[in-house]
Amino acid sequence: METVVLFDTQELHENLLPLSFTRPVSHFRVGILTIGEKWRRRLGADRVMSLAVSYLRVKFPAPEPDAEALFINSGVMPTPALVETAGNLCAGQRLVDAEGDTLAFRGTTAAFDAGEGEQVVFDARVDRIRYVFDIFLRNGRELVADYELLTLGRVSQPLPHTCTLIGSPMTEKGYPALFIEEGASVQGAFVNVTHGPIYIGKDAEVMEGACLRGPLAVCEESHVNIGAKIYPDTTVGPCSKVGGEVNNVVIFGHSNKSHDGFLGNAVVGEWCNIGAGVNASNLKNDYSKIRIWNYATRSFMRTDLQFCGLIMGDHSKIGINVMLNTATVMGVGVNLHGSGFPRTFLPGFSEGSPAGFKEVTLKKFTQVAERVMARRNIAVEDPDRALFAEVEKQEKSHR
Image (cartoon, rainbow, N blue to C red; front, side):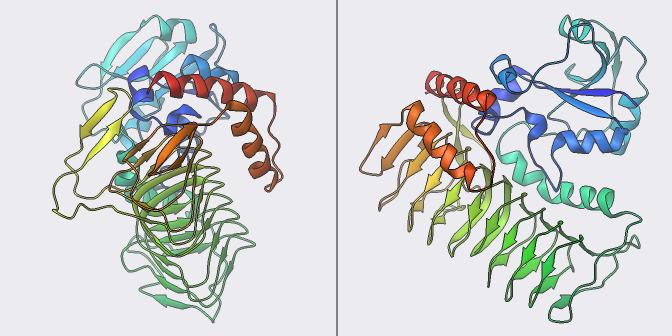
């Protein structure tokens, strides 16, 4: 057993803003698990650390310079071939892709930072995230991979007789297509596993009339409300609530979209709330390819995608009946309300409506965060306060 360190490059960090403002990339949820959890389980590591950009280290400490570890690029998903190759690296070896980018390194933190190491080229497929929209694009495949990892050899809780299972209860690989963890409640739901498995986490609740179509995950202590319509490739992260209609959405955790309204091809961070009747476009009326705000270039970038919805940074809120244009990006700590369509980039620490916005002070942001987190019995501690202050500076510097 060894320590695994997932490292962020500056380029990766900036291209994944605003979601990376508040966390290392290894803490991103893609599929059922976070990227760090995937690597820990795949490698059998006893400890996973993050090597993030400097300001994030006020909450996520970096390993010591002389610490020996296996370093893994945090934007890379653990495919079987990559896990085997990275796990077999000798001390001082650096695994790179065809472009020369580091995928893995075994050695000390100081040697890694210095760029040392004998290069070994990895010529197999590399699954990775580079931009925010890659999260929902990769989510379906990662859901299936994580499902197999989490459920192999285990026994699911039974599906209650009040529910309707659509599709074979077993996959082609011979494992259950539906897995319900201990303490979860599923009543009166329609559960379709025809196109992929469905995972219901510990102490989660799926209420009556909900329609679920796999692959999807409802993670620990999350709630699917009455009559919700949950389409494939969706992850409802831990301690979250979802209702209405969602399609290919990733909710990192501790966030709510409890009411009617549509959200598709989207990523929602933590401690967010989406009010009743909010609808977010994921397709332009002329069916043209979508452009999305990129923090790294401070401009709108081409995506070559036809479908792309909301990207929502942590601690942001959307009031009732708000309408959002295709590919809207909200930074950290945005409070959006009012009628009409707002612009498609809303910088962090701001509050307002399409009629106008004003800045939100760090004091007010922290007060709101304290109230929101207290509802889940989580206190805002000194590392959180320090991080909030750093994020405010970073948000303003990227405008």
